[in-house]
Image 1 (cartoon, rainbow, N blue to C red):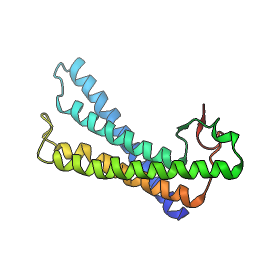
Image 2 (image 1 turned 60 degrees about the vertical axis):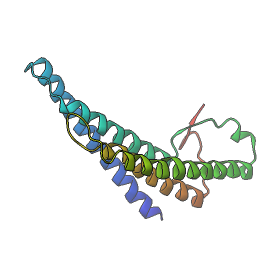
Image 3 (image 1 turned 120 degrees about the vertical axis):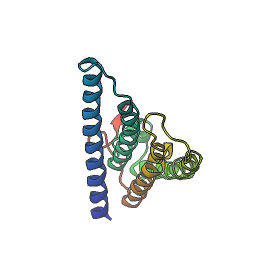
Image 4 (image 1 turned 180 degrees about the vertical axis):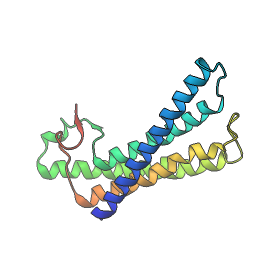
Amino acid sequence: MSKVKNYVDIILLSLSGVLIAVMSVLSIWQVSARFIFNTPSTFTEEVIRMLLIWFALMSAAYVFGQQKHIAIVFIRERFSIKGQLALVQMSNILLLVVAVVLMIWGGYHVVNLTMTQSAPSTDIPMAVMYSALPVSGLFIIFYTIYNIRTKHIPTADEGSEQV
């Protein structure tokens, strides 16, 4: 399962890198078109917005997989190692439920509701933008199951930021 996680890491990092690069190029084009050529580009703002949503959710999924998300650990650290592991596992199970209910089930319904709507300038279906939610939910579910199986307690040095 560790090899699969490494492949998923590579996929998410590569996708995030491509998305941020495309957003940068489109932002430069938008500013250049507006201020240098005096002809504002209308479609780039919508495309950048959609790419930003995809970038944020794919990057968030990767961060969950690395267990580098923000966490308040001072309560957890007061417990024994077994108690800390139990808290981490309960947190992972809660995260799994939230990802399934909100991101997959809720995202699926939002995608279905927006299937017939399209963005005004680009005519891209709004479902394309909202589909980032269930896709990132699948990645978060994969990482959460992986973290539950490995039974690892992240520390401030290697994982969660200490608050």
